[in-house]
Length: 228
Image (cartoon, rainbow, N blue to C red; front, side, top):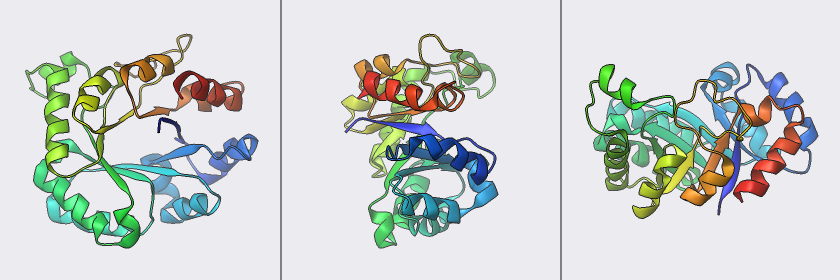
């Protein structure tokens, strides 16, 4: 069930399609995030689906329950494989998100996951800026418990917290993946594909280690070999 998801953080569809040319026949799992979605809109997702790509639509919805439910009703029509909300919105908001997706037949098939804490967040940031004094791993676990109570399928967390999520019987989608010889950039809680596999991640999301590689296809295949 494990899979590698490429984070397609490109500024427009032209750059994305240029990147995907060498992947012809591989059809990797793709993460479509805010940067490119806000530029190209839902049509990009429809076009990628038509080409045979599986999609993780990473928009991290976070608002009052009614607004999130309405947004998810619209997103459900796209029939993506995975989409997400912020767990910080609370159980009622996450329940509303699930109701919104379930309002469409295609949305019922979409796995809904919740972002616990971004992999750019450190314990220091959690305490000093967000005024959350609990241990970061404990915060992630509580958010995951809330997601489970709301009927979600899993969470976004770092690979370091994947064992906690596995114990709860949830999917873990883990960004912050780097090869051992890569820079960590702006990430704080990072792991290699091999470590993520060892820790029990269900999916890894890999961006710059693939998209900025000299040979992106080779980097992708390396990820698959080490993780899957």
